[in-house]
Figure 1 (cartoon, rainbow, N blue to C red):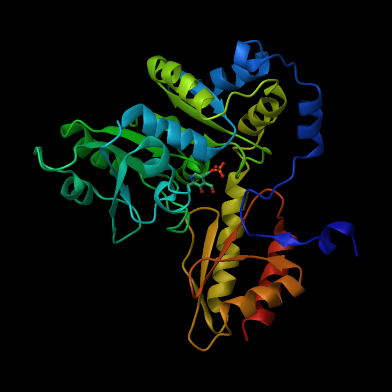
Figure 2 (cartoon, rainbow, N blue to C red):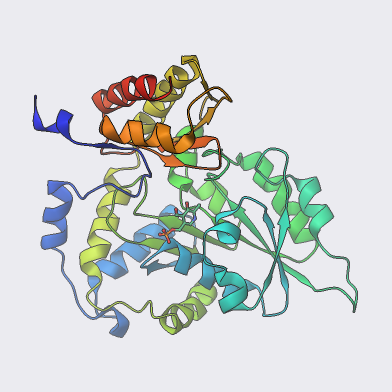
Length: 346
Ligand SMILES: Cc1ncc(COP(=O)(O)O)c(C=O)c1O
């Protein structure tokens, strides 16, 4: 059996990818300097390239998406104000309550019908001006939406939602950790979404396959303030060109291939949906949510059986399993995952 087919098919997240030989070569050859002193040409090039790609004046390289999201909140939402976000949002659920703990803001969680905020839902969540109510300062959007199964917030819908926010004087931040996937799915450039927001965060370490990092893009003035906030949080990295080189390579080389991840996710979902005891909606991007019927085995047992077959997925709720495709899983890996699911679910 060739080595690759014996390797674990790891579908827990698109963050599990390992740098390719070519990416490692680019890392090894990167020109570096002290980025905190402004001396790292590779960091500067990544930030310039990302800003241009996202249609923004300026960008900053961050060690993580969470740090970039939190700096965005600090930029737009003064302590004691309120941020409107959907109830399943990453910033609300998976960032260690950083927004209230670090930025001092209150998150106003909106339960949505589809997982994505609509203009009417945003309008209803914005507080009227009153001395007795907190001021709403920011709308936080997420695209693609992780917990909603990688759903794409369409440009036209984002335009409607942002219009409502603007009418009420709110700033808008887009958590675009997987905006590259949204762009690939819609066949539109990322900038068409990001120009609608004041700031946008894009992860380099998810579907794009870099080992570390995210970029935050916005106006030159916001990024100047963001530079200080990043440093306040301990995100001033020195010879970070080693990491930026991987991020630049990822942005330049790995955007096009995301469509293959989406095709594989669709194949996996379709096969899972046909298996007794399982159901799966057709995914829009690279995240597949598989629901276990009442007569299927316990979620933990299904995951253990998958693991025994060399396939990894994660629990996402009591009776839901998540599988995420990425550049380290090929067609054969998907075939193995389907065969393992068939064995594990009966
Ligand atoms: C939608 C979304 N936003 C933000 C993040 C945080 O990124 P990081 O893990 O780089 O901090 C993630 C990570 O999974 C995510 O899915």
